[in-house]
Amino acid sequence: MERNDQDRIIRKIDLERFLSTIAPHPFPQASLEQYTTTEPIAATLLFLASYSNSDIVGKTVVDLGCGTGRLTLGASFLGANQVVGIDIDKTAVKTAHETAKRLKMNKNINWIIGDISVIKGHFNTILQNPPFGIQKRNADRRFLKKALELGNIVYSIHNHPSTDKKLMKLLGNSSNKLIRVSPSPFLQEYIEKHNGKIIAIYSMMMTIPKMFSFHKKKKHSFIIDLYWIEKCKKSDVL
Ligand SMILES: C[S@@+](CC[C@H](N)C(=O)[O-])C[C@H]1O[C@@H](n2cnc3c(N)ncnc32)[C@H](O)[C@@H]1O
Image 1: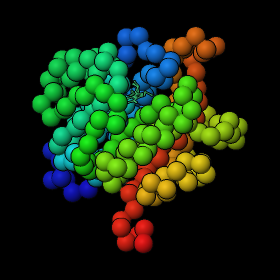
Image 2: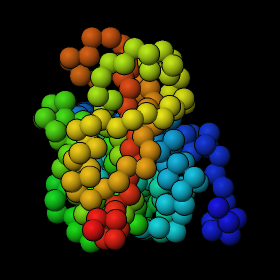
Image 3: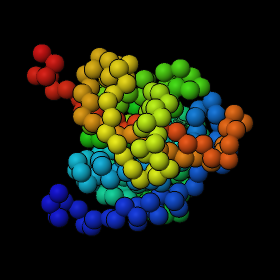
């Protein structure tokens, strides 16, 4: 990236520190899968989008299912031009808005309370950690469809399709390791049906604290897949 594309390069550790100051949801609901994206995962997504691919700095960005705003605020912190964060849950958006006010970051951020279907228009980049569909089957599919309607570049977090012991061993306990993997055939088919092309998928280990009654342990670790997707150009589709 050209140095003059942005005012400053932010270190990943500083981005993680910044993300850790963002308040989590005060009373998350399992039905909406309201867990906060952990700092290492959010920072990796934002770093990939921003510094490997130039998809954040100076760009218009939307965060679908923004929760309390980790990806929205992270994108703005890295230098996005305009960011929209949308979530169906009023408390989540209110918390995000208050954090943005506290951090004096509301100038280029718009917060929307509503279902993702209400958002229209075009954005350079779409970021999302949608509900995986654990509570409501295939909940992530609607988000992918909407993301591919709204713009050409999508970074989207999904549940890894199986309990892959070998992959778990390779990832270990570190949330900072990422391993390139193949797509879930179902998601791949769905993405391609909606004119998306998967550029790469990276598996990472996400560890969240016990939040919901069905969590049996103090910490809950699972593999997530970070999808980097591009919308096919018309000429690719023909
Ligand atoms: C896994 S959480 C991720 C939260 C946030 N993006 C983050 O990174 O911390 C998924 C979010 O999607 C929101 N959500 C679920 N269904 C939605 C819908 N139909 N429209 C908008 N937001 C939705 C939930 O309220 C929740 O905040």
